[in-house]
Image (cartoon, rainbow, N blue to C red):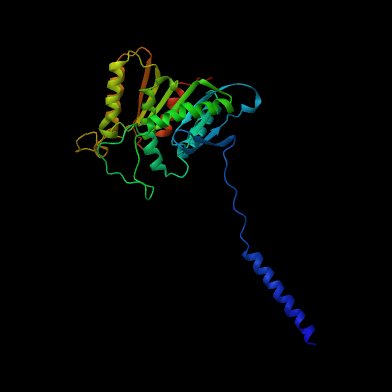
Length: 305
């Protein structure tokens, strides 16, 4: 009697436990959104002793033949890579622009984005600054653009050339803000590193305008600057009314700075230098990059339309 009376109760308890376990079981995680025809590769920077990733976007026709494609190298890739990949693809499909391979250069593994880009994209340690680090326990770092540039040309280039069908005679650099400082580092030291530069809103105020000094020094010791450069900037990237322009970040007039810098380059009359400056009147520092990119690509890549 006792045994038989427990059976329904035992079954009820088992059913309750089972039902609760089903209800409590976590749902499977939603699938991540993945951009088609993209890959992520790990690469160790030997001289820097740091690890990075490169993000690679292949064109739709990549698997269909043996063609070699122009290759776009974009810094600040954690943000800029999907923007460049999508705009390049759209320009191909809807404007007839030639297909490209896009290579995004990530921040260093384990580093905050601000920390990594300040260190890797800037040419000097600023003579005066009160910057704070976004890496607890580590002071802000600056001035490694030369070493980082050597990593790009000496390690990333051979890696990409070995693993992908790219035309390494048609390399494009794409940067914005600090990223454009890195582009200017290449331009004023090893201009032939890239065949075309797309430089948006360069931080020419950095370190009291050190890039103006670098440009003057280059002009004093060189008769040519073989490069194709597209500069772009927002028309709203100018000094607020009532403020006095200076080379300090808080008082910088980025629009006036870029016009001055482009004017200096043009005044040198370097026979191999081609520059173009485009101001996008209603855009600011945060919004201008897609416009700079679109027009910078059109200035270099061929189109069937």
